[in-house]
Amino acid sequence: MRSRRFGMATGYLAAIVVLGVTVVPLLFVVFGGFRTNAQINSDPAGLPGPWVTDNYASVLGSSAFWTFLGNSALIAVIATAVAVGLGSMAGFALSRYQFKGREALYTLFTLGLLFPLTVATLPLYLWLRQLGMLESFWGVAIPEAAFSLPVTIVILRPFMHAIPGELEDAAVLDGATRLGFFWRILLPLSTPALTTVAVLAFVTSWNAYLLPLLVFNDSAHFTLPLGVATFQSQYSQDTARVLAFTALSMIPALAFFVLAERRIVGGLTGSVKG
Image (cartoon, rainbow, N blue to C red; front, side, top):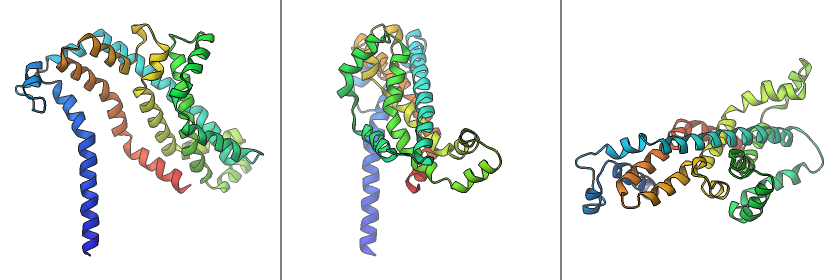
């Protein structure tokens, strides 16, 4: 009994430490946007007093912020659609078809989880330049989708494999083709896993910094992470305004993640069971 209480106390302590490490920096950024530079310099860890909304109003009134936001949203939507579309088809083939080399192909996708973007930076840049995809949203979205494919397939394959084969047999008896079974039965049943991989691909694309930095040179094409870096350089002396810009740039991804959090857990649970 005593050891159980000790284990629970240790678990709560670990949860509090993780929560503090995660949330405190986030609150510092958000609250910092409601302060003046004088308040931050006099008491960096204090709360706003009085609360100032000019920093957020200034950022929201800036056309550059909305341009960066629109670019990030467009690239994230394209990357997510490509990753989920191709990943679902690959997951379907790897989970429901029997063919030679299937496990080797799946292992190859799994090894893609260990392949960092930084290793591919130079060849990827040369390849995009030869294809004329620099300064193009597709030049960022397609590589981001490619790097999201391994985790997408690793989650979708066991989830689709766990769907009973009797459903497919019944669909075939009713006249459905393989493609019809995939489109009308398998995809709707895989909605939790599809939501999970979509959220992961969207958030990964939204937070990407290196790849947009590699492709874009024109500030009109910058995404929000690049916009934050540019804004920070431009207003390096205005800390409160930089914090407001950073806080606003985090809101869409955080809101998207919070709204889909339950579906993410459900999708991951299903893939593990599969």
